[in-house]
Image 1 (tube, one colour):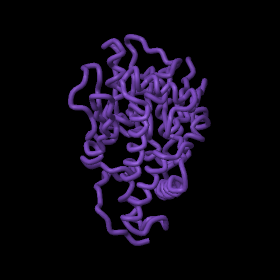
Image 2 (image 1 turned 180 degrees about the horizontal axis):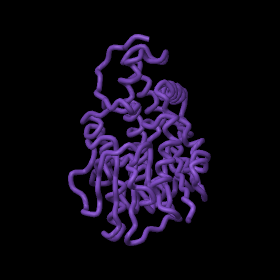
Image 3 (image 1 turned 90 degrees about the vertical axis):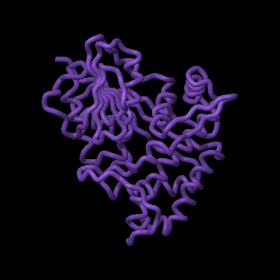
Length: 319
């Protein structure tokens, strides 16, 4: 398939990575989402909003209920991005807890942070040998578009190695989403893109087995099914409470921001899709844009539109 002409966005050039989202300033700043409530507005960059979405889906919690941290523990955040999860966790813990965030690039690391947080460039499939049995908790989320299928067991194995005996691993990944024919078509296109790069769109289905094969026990899974077009059911009520109690915004405003965030992620896949000819799903930049716009419209206006989140927690056996 020949390349489709389009306004190209830069992606990072790390040879070992198949990450499909851009690495430009637009990804960091222009994907700003405005959430309005009464007389004020709150602004989120895409990654910040992504954090709020996940936290809101689980009722505002940063940690699985079974995870308990003590004053001298160490915590590792894999694929830390902006470090927002670590920064918020640090505010809830004594300063004697040491927090370490790692990612394959430094571009999104915060410029200021508490003295008990450290950021460094590391590959989760090859963490430093000196970190064995060091961390009470290893946290990671949303690397579906970054880790190849063959790398997931390697990454989970490395996490098992660096978690201290009796310590925990906590992961979050997205599941399926559904709204209508545009959404189904884009989901098929995204699967084709990820498959072409060896990435694993269905890791959420395989994760419990991958965790057990690595040696983890007490594997726990929580699934949140979130309506994208209105508050229905207990999962949504947790989100409603978080929106009002933490951000004082309407649930509907936050849902609109979630949809916009998701579709901006999809738009960020334009270059890797069009550079290989569209995989037979689209034949021009205009067709790609129309497809994503159709997805956004369906998610905002289809009563049955829904998105899944999966939270996994597992323990390394004590000695």
